[in-house]
Length: 302
Image 1 (cartoon, one colour):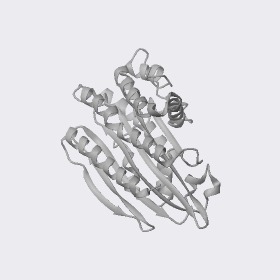
Image 2 (image 1 turned 45 degrees about the horizontal axis):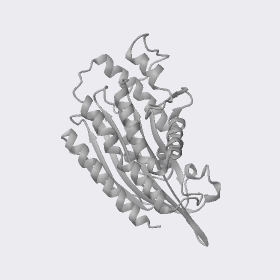
Image 3 (image 1 turned 180 degrees about the vertical axis):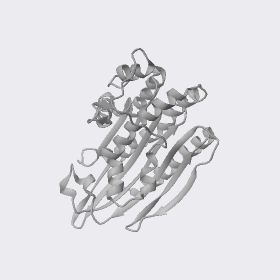
Image 4 (image 1 turned 90 degrees about the horizontal axis):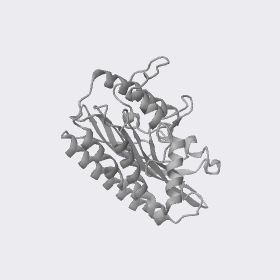
């Protein structure tokens, strides 16, 4: 086990992704290096009011502390009080064009230590898509890229991560998914049933799949015309994104509880959002089709 190797990979992943996104948008991402008084720091890369991206970020963080935050020990109370080291890359991209979906990806590594006890380590992360308008071609492409990233570990493992994503990115108070899913995993390695190299390899495969999964979609849709009504619906659906991130998202909760940098943590929030009282899509519209045919768990890769 070598956390320095993980850090080297994560920094390279951030560089590769930001370089590709800058080339696509034509506007550079701002770079903001920060340090954390309790230990560690990170590199925040953010774009606002780009040519294509209305807002987005791709962040690297590496933090450490004397005691695990409660959000990280809720499912593993035996680690409470242990020192921790956590690092990861997290990105969220909000295109301006409502025909181009929002996307999220993160990969992370944790290690909990205590004097006289063996270190406990694990990987986590995932990738998921949040379209505003229903385009089967795009969703199928995304899920097939996700499946290809995990298939070296078998069909059963892909199913496990796909179904975990469907459960995780779900707004219980709304009784609806945030988007069309993708992959999600956590605690990979914490139970000692998988070797470090294998867990790290799968994490890398998922991180490396991002550009192949997302870039072809926005390349196809970037020039589609859109109306103010479609932008208005996009802002309404973005409200679901905000609700999930502030109420359920483990990464957001961990970052805030661990004293992380708030500006970097909340870069995932969309710039323009709307809420309405008891809104329902009109019958026969693309908005209704999104709700009835896309915001339900499906075997898109098939």
